[in-house]
Image (cartoon, rainbow, N blue to C red):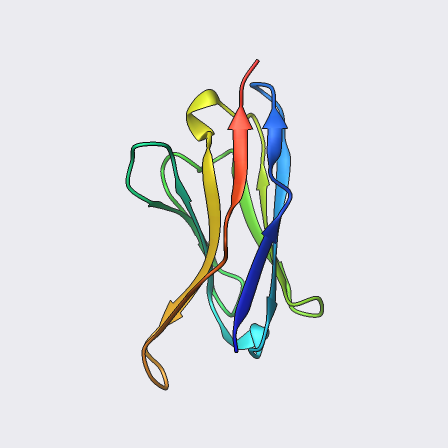
Length: 118
């Protein structure tokens, strides 16, 4: 079955950087668009970024200019490079892939905690 495993979270000071990784298994990774979401305490889960099969990227306004999503199909891994982190970036970050072909699917990782604090 499909498994998504995030890593790379931690505690970082404002202005710092982190790189999150999401290792996928049980799927032909190169054929799937991949997403990052996050959920801050007391808030709804929100979309952060997407990378398509072809490598095209899209970002939430809160991530533009600071975050970069990328993928390494040889390693079945998607990354989220986060720079100039702010306290409001504190959240659990989740890796996701979802779609409807050949049938509806929606897979999530367990999440990795990112805390931005001095």
